Image (cartoon, rainbow, N blue to C red; front, side, top):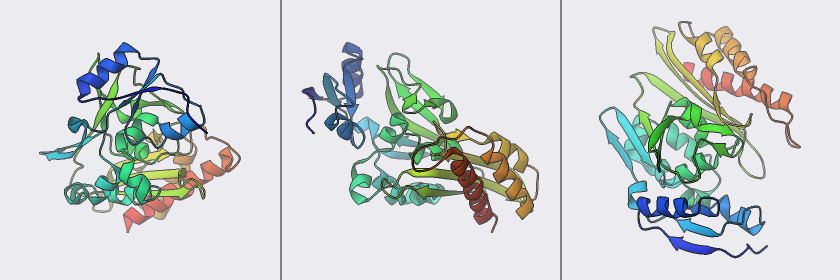
Length: 283
């Protein structure tokens, strides 16, 4: 199909992009990789008056590692996250996750900021942001940072206001000994997560001293399984402990149901994939 007519402008700076949004917040959409917006335009599910291309704004690009913090610009592509040796020396989960995203064409154009701002409930990066307890940097009339666990509100819905831009992801380097893993059951057609699990644990003499579990694909938004984490802390990572934590994770939310997978099926996948992720980290 052919999109409805719209104006196209290329923003030269973040300030200019925000200005375009503030000038017509209801009729303006930002575009970078465009992997969700362009199909929506063709199907006329979206009909903005104006597209603002932010793809050339340098300040939204790049991976910076300084001291105990990591900053990932919103326009950093999946391929750049996959290829970054400094980033993956600190957090190999980025390479592990990027490898599971779609195909090379998508990875070369799609951006982490676009994925987070779009808030597709089956996207991969939201689970990573939640599990790493990241903060999301937002620019606009009210510049701020928001914890990833608070950023995602509902299906395709975040705390972003219409005149705001997601600019970066901030992550504190994990404690020494913290290990992470990402697993997902892929939809056979789209490659999106039917259920995706990002888990991390730190073991001291066989006892869990820190843990995190982020889940995507199962519910209306990515979420952290606090029940599973609270149960794990202070316990030896035995098979019985893992099974109980996985069960708690599967019971911690109301799962989505569609033609591909029922809510009960997704809940069972959470239990299985959390268990497998933790078991892998224990070995």
